[in-house]
Length: 207
Image (cartoon, rainbow, N blue to C red):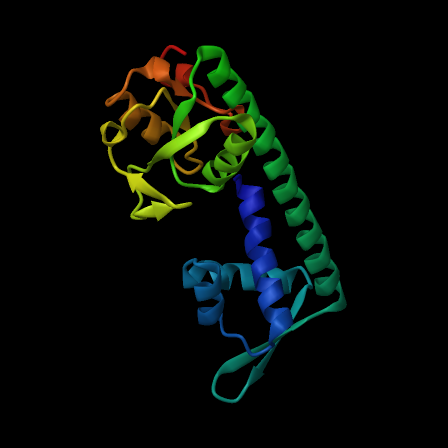
C-alpha cells in the first residue's frame, strides 16, 4: 500500500468516526485506527484545514467535531474509492492465484504449502479448492497465530511433510519470508504470485 492510499484510509477513518459521534476523542480515534496519537492529531488538523471537519471547544478542555457538507461528500468519495480498490485487489489476487496453480499443475505439483498469513493466503486457499490443488498447511515465520483456516500455522517449512511446492502469500514481508524459506527448501520449489509485483531476481535469486 502506497503513501497516498495510507493517507486516504486514515482520512476516511477520521471522517467515519466523527460522522458516528461528534464527541469522539483523538485518543479514541488513535485506538480505532491503530496508529499513534500524534498521527491522528495530524490527520484531524488536515481534515479541518480541508474544510471537511469543524471543531468546537467545550468545557473540560474537550472538543466536539462535526462533519461539514464538504466532509460528508469527501467521506462518500473515499468510501467508494476504498471499496473499488478492495474489489480490484480481490479480483487481481484471485486471477494471480489461479495462474500460480496452473503453473503448479504444469510442474506436477498437487500438494502445496502457503507461506505467509494474509488476505492473499485466504484467497489462495479458496481458489485452490476450485483448482484441484491441496493446501497441506501454512507457514508464517514472523506472526504469532497458531491456527488459520482450520490448519496449524507452522514456523518451519520442514514441519510439513509431502509438500510438492511452496507459494509465497506474504503481503507484508515477501522478501523476508522468501529469504527465510530459501534457507529451508530448494528455491526452485517456490512460486511467487504476480499480485506481489516482486520477483526473486530482484534479490539476486534465479527464478
